[in-house]
Length: 232
Figure 1 (cartoon, rainbow, N blue to C red):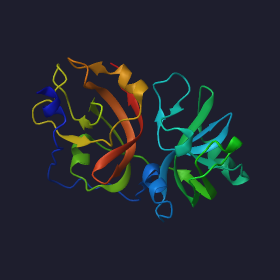
Figure 2: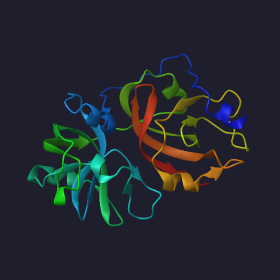
Figure 3: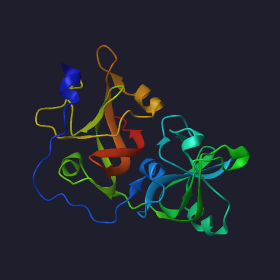
């Protein structure tokens, strides 16, 4: 019963919940149709291997954030002096640096790129700028057409193996509070380390907890780039 209630279709509230332009395409969608003209929203990850774009990072793996996708789904960036300014802004964390970026350029792949051909895609002549997060709420997001904004939102995550929602508030047992609004997340979630830190509902099929999500509001769902557990 709880699973059916928690993973019900998202409700939408009336009212003006518009967020300002610009809009972006999640990296996953860009890899499926690489010749799109819209800028891509992704994380820039820099470590001992080099620089690449990733569709998501896990911040629940220790000091160093790790990609949620394998190398075959990552976009290699050739060393380029034009990247120096944006690289300087990257946040150091453990043995890596990362930064949320808006990216335009010539996307190539699938193929074999980077050191030992380990990465599935490459972007030539990339232009990178900071990804402008729009701070919002679950209630406002639920009323917003899925038009590609990069958003940062805090709420209660409820996830099973195949579905996930972000809810305004939960009852103590992990079910959505009465009248709580919710939005769908792109599922299944790929951040196993995060899910392991959340509370397991009876039976273990559903996990829940307060999180902050950075992602792209795209095609009727919030596509998460990064999810951090909110402590306390």
